[in-house]
Picture (cartoon, rainbow, N blue to C red):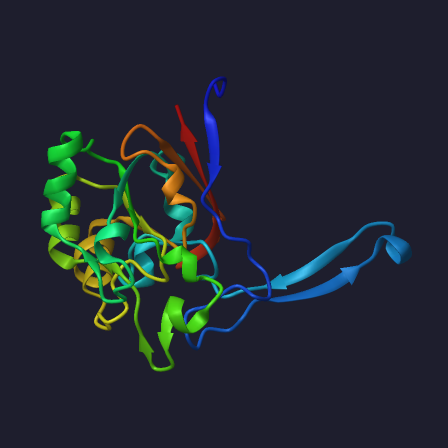
Amino acid sequence: MLQGMRVVDLTIPLGPNTIMWPGAPEPTFENLTSIKNDGYFARIVSFFEHTGTHFDAPSHFIEGHNTVDKFPAEKLVRPAVVIDISERIGDDADGELTLADVHAFESAHGEMPHEAAILLRTGWERFNNDVRKYAGEPGKTRFPGFGAEAARFLVEERKAVGLGTDTLGIDPGYATDYPVHSTISHPKGLWHLENLTNLSQLPPLGAWVIVGVLPLVDGSGSPARVIALLP
């Protein structure tokens, strides 16, 4: 099945230096056993559910909605639509995907498939070694994201299954009421992917995304290994 296809990893490494949402606890790693003393090596790892490249379930914002373990596997393997606004927004930390961007995308590439994963490339991954630039100042998050009008169109008119981006959050950092999370996508059962990388290697259409999320019982989210398959 994979013959002739290219595999692209969209995941940032998860470790002690992974940039976190401001105020969130950093992951911890404790050696439990060693090969020298025990014959095998293992650690105890503790992490915030929304650490690194990760998956948001609707229950993250909508009480009683689907948790991570409730998603059927077929919802985690979807055609990918990659919308690139990196050149237009440049270094604008308040940049966002607009409905005009979506219409321009479809004018260039045709109507996007329904029930796809919509992946937004902002180019912000280039700052993920600089917490101030990637996340914003203390107490004031600033990074690009999905504008509410564009997100509503993608959810209601294009029946998107999930939204993903290469920043800390689906909503722009300035939008502290989280309109996309709380009123547009999660209420409709969509999942989110945040802190993606390597979106520049994906074509606008034609790739598939595979979301390797941990099926944490009652989880609001989970770190995920996200893979793209390119024809």
